[in-house]
Picture (cartoon, rainbow, N blue to C red):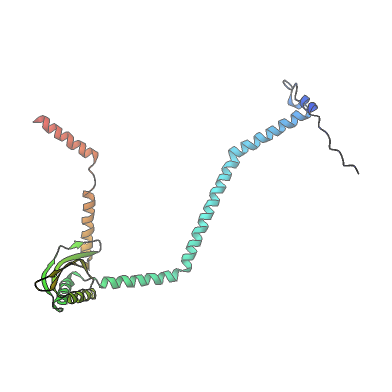
Length: 243
């Protein structure tokens, strides 16, 4: 059985329909030019609609989709936190207990003298001789104060080691820094120079004072305003001219 033949298109006849259209009403054009005109008008309408309306709508849709994805991620994050809320509260309580334990290891201002006595007794109890025990200037931090103490001890090596161990086991926090050891040939003893640092917590009044001093320091480090500098220079120049 023979396959049906496709209709043939006479391109010359079609192109002939586009000749002589100038000055004629489009309604009187042949079929091919009218179809081409309608197709061009349809494309123009679609392009204008895309540029004026649909493009903005698609951009708003993309913004909304991105916002939806972000909100979903936030929801999952908050849901995870809500599920683990009880565990997070327990961790918070544990951290607070740990912080309170550390704060108890910091002596108050009234307890500093007793702590210094503990350090001295730790050395004397080991048979060590203090050649120097000089508390330095208190350094105030944001929530605590640091007291450096210059010490020089003379004794046997084992006794010095036992002293450092006993200091580390004190109820209050004491650190030994910048340790230097030197051997004395005449006495066969060892001299240990060190900076012992102990810490205490600040009361509310001291914290407020430390913050005020820090604010004054930051204010003093700010550069002078250009207007003020210009005014000073102008005043200096005027004074020089008057002289």
